[in-house]
Length: 474
Image (cartoon, rainbow, N blue to C red; front, side):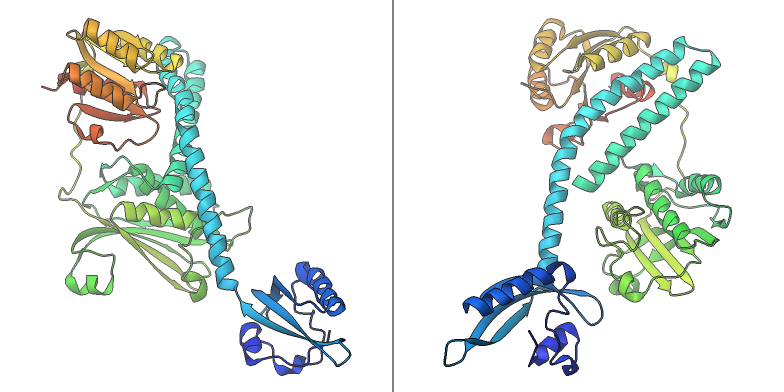
């Protein structure tokens, strides 16, 4: 039908002037919805029955608006439909919120699925990683050592991939230690020089002395790598990436202007590129989940969202400055710790080897029980195993006075790790326990002094070191 009147609201929503009066009213409807609306309209004219429908319109600026329209007919004296009055409401914001809600639900489902499969995947990776250590002692020829190194590296990459999926789906849970940012930037520099195009030049400006930060090294590595990859992508024809680090003290005047900042000393890491810059309208949205200016096959829109999540989990914040045609600068602020440098303490691993101490291994996975038993026995420990909590209690009742340490999986059928630990501590409140899981545990029992958490998968070196430390405790 031909339009004979458009209200001022129509113009404000879609941006069209009154000059379109008399033209085809279906022209601005989204091509995918046009035939559906045309059918509904002519059915309304034929039957004289009004309609309510939701569809998409193409605005004058080529953006898409969602409209909810109700059509009412006007008839002449003979009962023929002569006009259709359409009252429309802009529901674009509502549709966007619905879309975001559906995405949130989908991510929640992914989180549930990821949590379920992470335990199984880590159980698959754990015996592989432990087996590599055992085999490396037996297969000493260069070719075997190279193959074992590839196997170990691939297994660790699989483990990191699981952690990344879980960190996004469930929130970031890291292993926080005192780290020196300069070391991570050095690692990033090596990766950039080896993998980025030769047209990309890297410059670093790092002071000789920097305070340490309390952080998960893998996650900070991920943050800086992500920022550098974005900088590379912003310079398809080449350019310079600069990474700087400095120590600053934030005062009251600064924190009044920056709501996320707190009084104190921060380590600031700056990543600058010479790319095209980011327009203001896009700059406001770059940290939104799923927002990306890249094509579908080149970006998920999760990169900067994950960066922000990680930085917030470290009690830090991030600022971005950009000028179109000149480049972009990201500044990452992370709270500094008291010590200026990390004191590296050399540990004599021989002091941590076993001397016949009896260790109880509790795990429902036979492969993990077997390879852990072989690993511990090769390092001087005696071992007994149990397939679940019930069997562990029986073994502890028999050998309780001899058992120096219990290593238990936290996710087992029938009687899980938490119930097992509680039962064993009732039998002996001083029993030392290493709780093992592919998922971060945060129950009350994990805060007891006698319980230490070990994340799956782990290397034999890490396991032996932790066992030695626990046994040597008073």
